[in-house]
Length: 330
Image 1 (cartoon, one colour):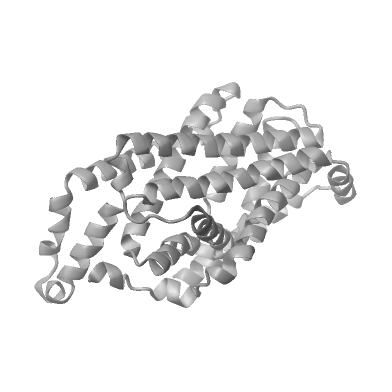
Image 2 (tube, rainbow, N blue to C red):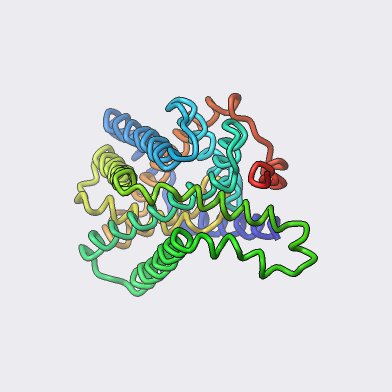
């Protein structure tokens, strides 16, 4: 099933690359990229780096009740984790950070997974809020309305699920009673510990002050990310409003949510080209030029810092996929 997803993702990526490149004058694209204003490119790159720093700080706050970890180690694991998300298909890369932190700090992986779950919900909520604020600036299209509706439903279900997990802990920990007897005899303690440790990973929600800080960091992460897009607009000499950068960011996040080739090749470029040409009347050559450079800066930053820290945070795909949360089962 995993291999099928990879093949489908690669095919979809190829189709989106074709659609992005169709009708392009490649000489024009090269000239546009060659004439960008370099100081603005450096500033955009700095902002991209700052978002990664803020991501590691936010994760450290969420992890605080489970394990205390120094900022450098936290940043190194975060960098390798995002490299894995970029490089490993089928979203298996999401497991790398929990895997590494559990190996280095002797904590249950299921607890670390709980912290990633909180991160993803907060990211979705923040992106949705940004979309709700900025999308009224453009004519609503049916697919955007559907996207917002689907995101809202997913977030609502996730928030309800979080509330139930936090407030109905004892009930969840006793769900092993619903397992067949022959399974329960061997796995009751394992399942009980797995659930218990995962709930421990959600502990940041209980501390209101710390949770507010985590929410504020989430807003900062995505606002800075939007500003990096706006600065890159200026590097190209595209005189678009600030809210255009956040609309592009919203649509881009929707686009890269679709599993495709490693590095989001295809869906990243198609989302940028479609948004900039259809909504903001840029030529396709200009839109693709922006998509190529923005993708190169974003993925290049993740690649460089991820590879820099990879020797100290090695993992294998085999261990990642076959890892049993033995610490959760003790």
